[in-house]
Amino acid sequence: MFDSTYVNDSIGMHAPHGPYVAAFDGFFGNAQEESRFRQQRLGVYFLSDLFSAGYMGKTDYVKDKELVTLARDKTMTFTGETFDQWDLDVLIHCVMRTPTSGGGSEKVRIDPGELLRAVNLRNYDMNRERVFSSLWRLHMGSMMIEGKGYRYMTRLIDRVLLDQRLGSCLVEVNQDVVTSIRHERNLSLDMENRRCFKRNGLAKWLHGAIMSFKGGFVAEMECLRALCGAPDRSRHAFPARLTKALDVMSECDAIRDWQIDGDKVKVVPSCTRRDGTACGYISPSLF
Image (cartoon, rainbow, N blue to C red; front, side, top):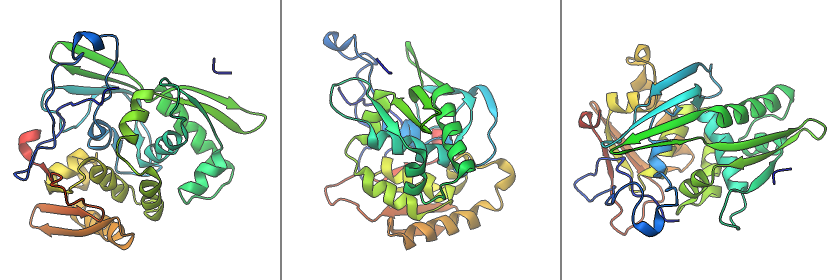
């Protein structure tokens, strides 16, 4: 029924080991590429409070909310129902199943029961409705990314068709999002790790951070709290919540090592490559 160049955007502060950010040569690039959109870096989606560190929590409607990001040369605003890590699980599941041939947006049939089993949740009526509600939020939410001399308006899912007779749906994920999330990723392993985390939203948010910073990262705790969307009222409870999330990630073999030293947090992923991959650094200078 439904009839690239990988982007180099400045979204992270590099550590002394080497840069996370590659050079940015203008939004549209050279003359041959003026008719193309460019994909955002993975951190635009994962290293921000676009998908907060909750799980199946209360959603709120926001209009032109400025997102907390690592971007130094742009601002991001969001309008729609807020997302958390449940919505990111739904989005990654759809991305994994989206066909890659054809070069443009491709539709994919999503079975809610299969999705629920993939993220270690029970398949019953209320949870299936949560799948449909999440797809609706992912379609209706819109982002505007504003940089020097441009405004880029986009959404995560372009179209959704619910088949009420079969209880399944057709989903068309924004092709830019598909390309960004799939870039150099083993999504099957990523989803296996996220499945192991169960409903620990902070563990899943941190996993998104190491998907972006492949060499791991060092962060100041207060910056990390703001970046993951944890509310101000949770400031005092955040260290204990963070410790629990890191323990869960360690038990699931998603990270090799982690340390909390005062207000500094260091996380090293299990699959760190030995090719000089940079370690990210999150500091107050980014906010």
